[in-house]
Every structure is written in structure tokens, then in C-alpha cells.
Length: 351
Ligand code: AVJ
Image 1 (cartoon, rainbow, N blue to C red):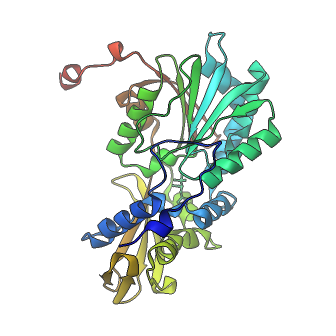
Image 2 (image 1 turned 90 degrees about the horizontal axis):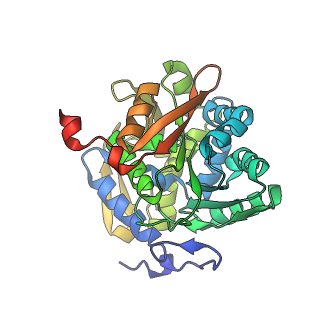
Image 3 (image 1 turned 90 degrees about the vertical axis):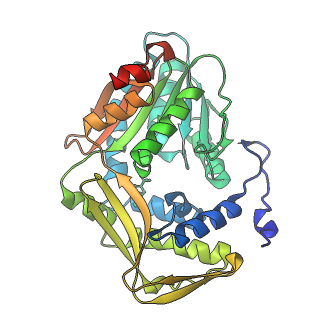
């Protein structure tokens, strides 16, 4: 196999890159082999977000059916000053803001504005796997709030060891947009637990979660009438065509989004419309699909307030306050990093 041409990335010097140059295409190849060889075929949801997929997701956030982004934004619009004040607490030190999966940072501007109103300026560290997204984030934040110092960090934060956050001062970590919903419960706790190791007691985490609700609006949000979500879903196959020399016929697969009640999650699948064989040139492999056989591409968990509290507590935080929209469809939760000494031990938990 020869991936060398695909691995040549131009490094942007102003961006801190953790874990060396991206072995992006190697990861894509590995994920494709593993996922397409399994009995229940699957592809990991992070594969959605290449340049085309990121644009499609932006388009999804503007769809009338996709309430998540607009409701979260409405919560920020209404409560940002309160959220920031609670995050800072009684402490006089300025807050520094670190954001996991920052993307273009457009959805963060309301919160950042509230921070600057409170303390004049701030250090903002957007963390993202995509360098293109980080460059956009720097531009967007600089244009809207020039007093903010932006220090982008290019990292796949699910794998990298250390974010190297500034050692002093109180930090506000952001993980918004219900991105946490893409992880199975155990993995979500592992991720938030890792984030906690990057923070200090007293630091704050602001977590956005889509809440459990009637099935109808959930299904509508992932089966939009304009078909953008279907295109977003199929982009995962288009990406394998582009990057791995696969020959997926996009019209031979059908977008399917269903509600899995027992797991409290939306699942997205791509169903093969017929018996077919797909060649993936760079893997030197063929993959057979039966008619109706699915590739499971995403889980999007929906939470009760109790589940949010439990997830945070198991990851080493204490939930301090939640803010909701009027329908309680979306929640924004402020949690505090607790001292390791006061965490319940395994024995306590077992007792
Ligand atoms: C970015 C993970 C929050 O799960 O709703 C949108 C991704 N998938 N439409 C979500 C997504 C289908 C989105 N998250």
C-alpha cells in the first residue's frame, strides 16, 4: 500500500499540532477495513467531517427540522452572561476558554462575547482535527472579537494525550452542540474523564446535550425534507471513493435514520439497495453487500437530565446548573471539576 502522497500535508506554523503530522488517510483506511469487514458493517461518525462533510453539516444546522443548533444558540443568547458568571464563580482570575471540536467557532461567539464583556479579553483555545476549521475559527473570532487571543490546537482529542493548557488561571472547557451524543455511554465517560485530567479542580465544563423527547421531531431532524442529511450520510461513501479509490455508487445506497428507544439514540444507516460488490482500490479489497444490508454510520444519543448528571458524575465532575429552551428539547450544563480526593472510590460505588 502506498499512502505517502495522501499523507503530505502542508503544516501551518501558527497552529499547535499534537501528536505529529496527521496520519489521516491511514486512519481512514484502517477505519474502513475494520468497519466494512464486520458482520454488522459500520463506519465511524468522525469520517463525516472532511471539507465537504463539514459544509454539509453547516447546512444541516440551518435546516428547519434540525432544532439542535438554533435552540442551543437561543440558550446562549439568553443566558451567556449568567453561564459565564457561574463558570467563573467568585474567583477574580480571568477565565480562559478551551473548546473541543470547535469547528469554525461561529457557534461559540455569543459565549466568547460574554467572557470579553466580563473581563475585557481572554485566551481562546479551539481544539479541532481539521486545520481548515481552525484557520476559519481564528479568522471568525478575530473579526468579531479582536481583543481575544486565539491559540488553535490541531488535535484528535479522542486520542492525543495532552492539550498543554496554560497552567494558571481558571479554565472553562466547552463541549457544545451535543457532539457528546456521538459516543456510546462508556466512551462518553472516558472522553469527559480524559478532559478532566487536562483540567484542575475548580475549572468548569459547559456541555451541550440534545434531550430525550417525542419521536416525531427527532425523526424529522434526521430525515429532513431537503435531503441534506441523506447527502451528509452518503458523503462518508463519497469520501472513501475520493480518498481510498473506492467505487461506491451513491445511488445504490439509501439513507435511513431510526429511533432506537432501548438505547435512547437516533441511528443513521446506509442501506444497500441491491446485492452488490464494492471495490476499494487502496485496500486491495472487495466488500459484498446484500440487498437491504446496512452500514451503521452514526449514533446520536438523546439524554434525560438524570443521564446527564450521572454521566458527569462518573467522569469526575459535579453538575452545578442546567439551562434549557422553553420546550426542554436542548440542554446546556455547567459542571465543576471536583478534587480527586472527594470522588467516590470504586469500593464506595460497589457498596
Ligand atoms: C454534530 C453529532 C451533534 O448527532 O445531531 C447531524 C451530527 N448527524 N445530522 C448530531 C448529525 C446527522 C450531529 N452532531
